[in-house]
Image (tube, rainbow, N blue to C red; front, top):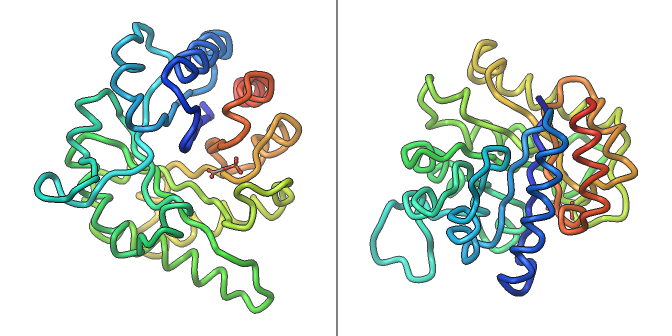
Length: 250
Ligand code: PGA
């Protein structure tokens, strides 16, 4: 089953609008049953959306957590708090967080903390630029091995790697499907090399960056890909429906 992670980022502006978007997404999730639907709303909306939801088709994700479980960390949110609010997933190391200063080491700390808090981590990796010397391969491999360094052996099955090249996030177009496939293979090979074949097989690998109604079908047919992480298009019911349908049919 393919996953569609709806990353709302810092949208929409009010709870009323968030509720409306949630209701539409919920209905679409009930129609396209052959896709896993995860919504990552702003933290402030998480509890109320989760509390009002009686179904089982939608799961909730936080967009970020802190790397400590509690304490004097003004403005931060812990894994235990977002789990208590209804999340079962958390996005860790999104490019927009990395741009605000999160390092590979911070990501490494957050992953086991999220697992301990009963949240399945969606670990975002991706190169900033696609250079011609292959430096980007090194960058992505390093992000992955650092992020997963402290994951207990039995927990690899709870991990999703979201490969999101930074240059495609918010861009008009996604990379071609060949390039996406090559990166899916690179992610899997990196995990197999560093942690072994068995753990590689238990991890899910998804793609994110400029996924929309026009390219979703092609992207979701890429071999070795378990789903997509969607930003802008997850805010638009028309575009979202096409993506969920593509995931359902894939
Ligand atoms: P986008 O964002 O779909 O708007 O490009 C993707 C992401 O940041 O995860």
